[in-house]
Length: 124
Image (tube, rainbow, N blue to C red; front, side, top):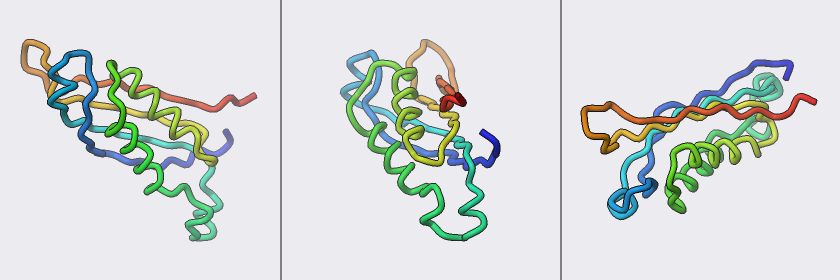
């Protein structure tokens, strides 16, 4: 990857039913996401044309579909699903996905539990 252009989507919030415990699957809870996406976005910056850009609304809709969709047990798996989806967009070379679960029952005070992963396309 030659360029280091980055798009940031911070503070995404969706309601989902993910977790290991039955009450998480039944009641559901909020999930918060931060996403950083790297690629060569120079064509869009030069043309000012959405057809040349990574459409943030499409990325958002893809993430929403995953978080609000089929329940999974682990944040690690959920994070990987989101990464795989984002990496499917043409211009994307690398992405960082951070998923936070604020309402974790852990036996004490906690702001959130979370997972952060990075996905990269092969440079070979």
